[in-house]
Structure formats: C-alpha cells, structure tokens
Image (cartoon, rainbow, N blue to C red; front, side, top):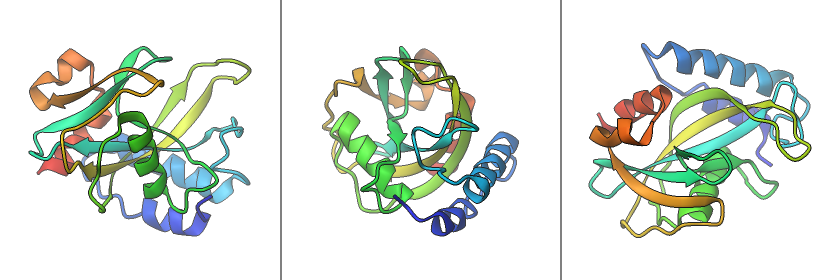
Amino acid sequence: MPDVQPTIDLARTLCAPGDGQAMKSLELILQLLECSPAPFSRDHFTPGHITCSGMVLAPDRRRVLLVHHRRLERWLLPGGHVEPGDAALPDAARREVVEETGAVLDLEARLAGADVHGIPAKRGEPYHLHHDLLFAFEATSEEIQVSEESHAVAWCSADEFDKYGIPDNVRRAWARVVT
C-alpha cells in the first residue's frame, strides 16, 4: 500500500484553478488521508476510501479512453481500488487502466483531478464514497481490449462527450490535460 504522507504531498500538487468541485473533493481527500486509520482499504466505508482513475489520452491526444462499466452500466474512465502491491497512487491508476483496457501507457503520470462520489450498495458493501484521484496518461498505441469488468471500451473525442454521458468533473480534467 502507498504511504500516506507521500500521497498527501502528491494530492497537494493538484492545480485546478476555477474548478471548485475538484478543490472541494481534494479537501475531502486530504481530510480522509490525514484522519483515517485505513484510507486505502476497500473495506473502509465510513467515510469511504481512496481510489484512482486514469484519463488515458490516445496517441493523437484528441481522444480519451472509456470503459462501459458492467456493474454501474455507464461509461467511465478506467480505475478502481488501491491494492496492497501498489507502491504509489499513480501505480494503482496505471495497474487499473492496464487491467481494464490492455492499453500500453507511457511512463509518465500526472495528477489531473479529484472527485469524491457515491458508490451504490452491493453484495454486503454499504453505500460509500470513493475519494478518487485522477491521473493523466498517454497511450503509446490505440490497441485496447475489453476486460470482464466492462461491456466495452472506446476512444472518445471531446465532441462525443454528450453521447457517452461524460460527467463534468472529467470534462474539466480533460480541459486541464489537453491545453
């Protein structure tokens, strides 16, 4: 599992001027990291736990990689829980992206956003919050594959965001990453 203090230091590097929602989410994430005995544990439901997502840009930097999530039945960025073998949060985000899409990523990851959102109850887990840190990556090829966690994967351009129901927090992070 990642160490808490380096994660706090990394989270504080997020620069999202004018994005009040991301900054409020970051405040909640920092509070969780500073006050929770187990902020990375997927079994820590009150007030939730840290997760990571990956905003993967296509090699042309004009499209982002999406997964159609099997359980939530909607298009999302690939991502998920922090695992014991993840040394740092960018490693967790990279692992999740590769597991869910098979994408080949460059070596650099950049913190691009923060979002605290609710997750519906399921199989013994109560409703809880994911305190999600979003990392930007670039794919080195357009080759992708569907995992068992998804119905489909797709490259999505900004003019298709409405078609895929891309949430505002992802749109704002996209604008920070591609400009």
